Amino acid sequence: MISNCLFVLVVLLVALSSVACNSADPATPVVDPIQGTWVLRESDGPQGPLYLNRVETLPTDRPGYIIGMDGQLRVRRAVGWCGTPPIPFGVYDGVWDRESEKSVLLRYVEPNRIVACRLEIISLDEHELTCRITEYERRAGGGAGE
Image 1 (cartoon, rainbow, N blue to C red):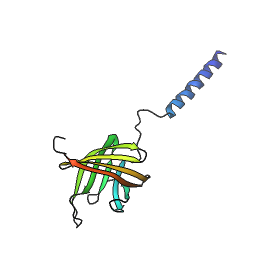
Image 2: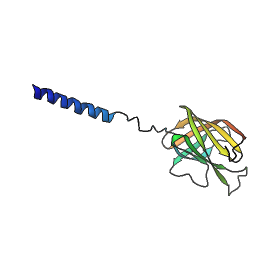
Image 3: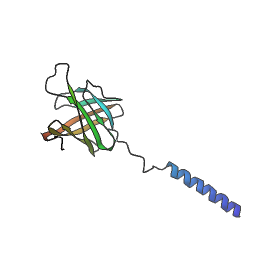
Image 4: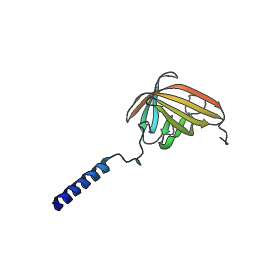
């Protein structure tokens, strides 16, 4: 009888330990599907959607975003208003926040300006992001002390 109880106890311990190993580890960070490096493929104008592709690294000659872990953000965008090649690009660091399943707020600093940009996610999968800029605000600031 003692050997039967011992056998049942060992089986229970093995079963419980296997369940514990399969449960989600709280130390494992949850990866938001928007995290990654996105390059602009095309745009339907200032009010239309932006179509972005996920890439390994952001090209130096295209606009895009690096949406990193822990809210880190890097934005590459054209500098100035002229669209004649070669187009100069600036790289700006900032932060991002997921506001809802379909909304992301980007905040970054350009020279002498702070930019806040809200994106509405239209579709998102592992290769493509389609979104629309629903709010865009630039205000003075962004000096060396901010």
